[in-house]
Image (cartoon, rainbow, N blue to C red; front, side, top):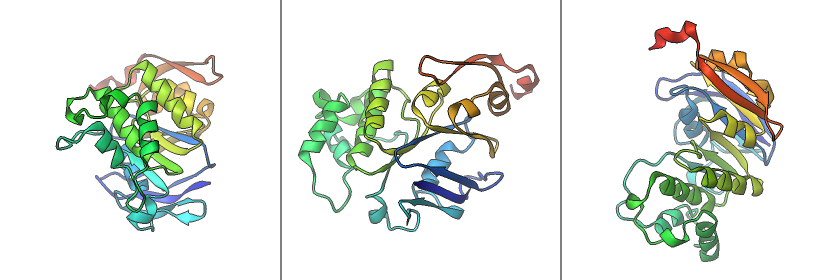
Length: 253
């Protein structure tokens, strides 16, 4: 069980209207949704211990992750953040290998397997800065997977990916029975892969629960300022069609 216990943000001027409490069974996924600037990335970095929390904690298997040393936490939790900095000429293989926990021996077999599964075998010796956005995204996801932890925090894992790699990699993650918290912009992708969703807006927790409980026209209007039509898709999950911006929110522009 992953437990977020009365967590409050303390960075970038962002605060939640009330501390976050959430239980996520082991092996399930929580998708974070909400407009830009609502705190998705700040929440992920706070959960990873990269940013301080003003109160509360994160527990997994009865262990407090936020009070662990970085070395201890690296065995339990991996985070993939958006990559926007040069890697000093490092190759794809070298960047993925950086995901190894500090006190573990480099597992070449696992490294080769991950490069193959993420479609990076032919690019393994290519410098990262020469890759496309989608290839970089696959590399950073492989790096997080190489850390081989039971919990993964993913900041927009679907970003830059084409349709094949998007569904291939998210399916690969689901097959590994990991406990995942990931942010998404695409509500339909989040609904397809996540067991629970947390919808944020303006520091408020608009809704949290199963996808069909969260993705309602009223919640989407409140969070995003859009009119939406919600049906049940072929996977039995909500399918959202955005009809347009709400008239009463046009003063945003």
